[in-house]
Length: 253
Image (tube, rainbow, N blue to C red; front, side, top):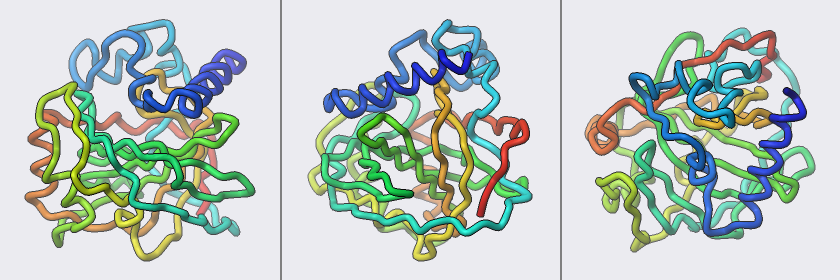
């Protein structure tokens, strides 16, 4: 099993690097159709396609409820982002903004290129049992295919100007996309305080590949009620996978 899901992860990572026309979500959709409710919902993902086995059998699955984090000396995340969000996609599962090459984070001696960011409502990760109304995932990959996701939690409050570009041009029909008139800047989504939780996990959509490094920003940012409702209306349904068991994993902070 370990050999199998490591192979999936490496193949997925290679695809991210080598095939600029394909995105992480595109590759994740290559198997059987899946969704967020009924017989195609998260409880059944592992049964829909042999490639999705880890969705049901994996022991390091995401998202999680973050609690009892261990105090450690986590390294700083070194952000090198430009305004590179160009292609906005409604893939039926989320709104995704694909990123042009050149933006990356340096973390633990590796450079991880920012490939795309997308959103979930309500949040997928919880903190001490608390769910947030929305969450952004900034998806990165290094040259060897290792995946790193930075998660930003949103709470309802002041309007978030960083969302304006994507929200104004949001494609409302599934499986449509268009180029943004103004390139989106992922760095504007980040909170001022860059402290974070870290854990080992997986993709939160099929094929649920493991070996993903998760960095969840501790400080939430705000979005207005109207902004959150706009995204939820376009999706037409919640697009969050339920929290998964830690299975003995340690969360660092």
